Structure formats: C-alpha cells, structure tokens
Length: 156
Image (cartoon, rainbow, N blue to C red; front, side, top):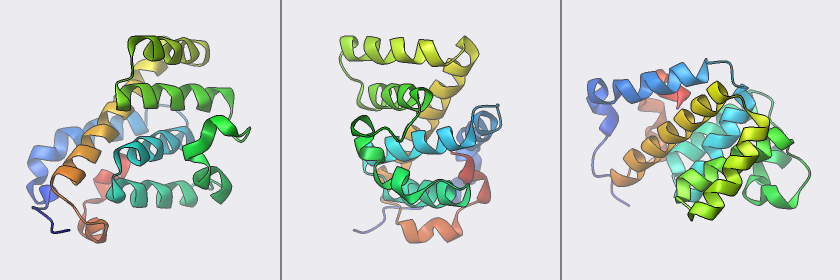
C-alpha cells in the first residue's frame, strides 16, 4: 500500500477536528469508555492507524488485553458494563449507519445509560473518530507515521 499523502502535514486544516476530539476527551466521559468507542469504530472501518494508536492508549490507561481482544465480540461476553455496551451499540449504529430500527434499539440503550449531555459528547466522539478513520484510510496513512503525528491527535 502506497500512501497518497500525509494529511497531518496540513495540520491547520485538521486542527478543528483535533480540537473537537480533545474537547470531548476532556469532557468528563470515562477515558476508558472513549478508547473502547474509538477502537470499535476503527475496527469496523479497518483503520490501522487509529487501531494502533487507540489500542496502545487503552493499554497505557490500564485496559486489559482480554477486553481489547474481545471488543469485536462484545455482545458475546460479560466483560463490558451496561454503559459500555450501550456506547458500543451506539458506536456501531452510527459507524455503519444501520437501519432505523437498529439505530432506535441502540438509542434506547444509550438513553438508559447516558444523560442528554453525555449522549451529545459520546456522539461527537463517534463523529470525530469516524472522521479520522476516513482521513487515514482515504489518504492511506501508514501506522508507521504515528511517530510523526502531532501529539494532539491522541485525543481522537
């Protein structure tokens, strides 16, 4: 795979997305939950850059290897809390843009676990990570470039 370009070389253009991710990251939602959301969206989208970055970050925050490995099968294990399950269902609904019935089911779960403000914060993080996934996939950014990335991207 040949990279098309490094979009992070145009940092001024990406800064609003980075800033949005950083704002949500520090908004009061659990950092571990946000990392699970970022990993799950990145698994669905196949974004190697974001997977490498957010699995590394989740480990650094103390996330267990078992929960990281089984995230793709979160429905099949009791390792995740009801709140995490609701967030993961909502992540999948918005990342895949599921049918209205599937979105409604995911929304019903999110409503039971998150306040109105938290639902907005969670949705913003899902939007941000999907945006970064699309930049990385669209421009064929290689995970090796992580070391050249601005630290600010860590929030998304």
